[in-house]
Image 1 (cartoon, one colour):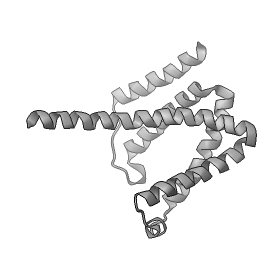
Image 2 (cartoon, one colour):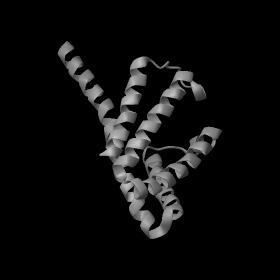
Image 3 (cartoon, one colour):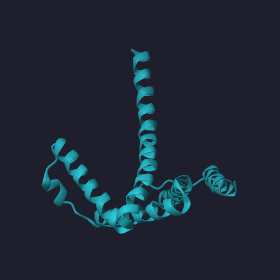
Image 4 (cartoon, one colour):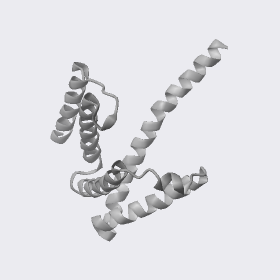
Length: 155
């Protein structure tokens, strides 16, 4: 029985690792697709089309899992509004960056900047998230990633 629980625990850990890996792959593909779409309809058109299809997909998933419209409209807050606006900023910035810098550098810079800001937000506990103070190992890891971006650019 203990061996079975150990296997289940390992599978759960693998799934927790696999989920962000799948997200990372999706982001890399998405970045390429943004740039390809923008060649035909421009950056602003890309933002509109991407979000329209994203809305349709999200609504389909929402209704498949039997979501209720009242759940969507009863709890609208500033974070939802800002997140939607930031989505447009992300699509626009990534689309332009891929055409200027290529996919890999765009992803590298996006990930490093996300990690830096996420660590700052976590360190100070902003927006009501649990505070998670930074340590020297994390600072070193961030500097190593920044160095990696510089090394990549010089190659």
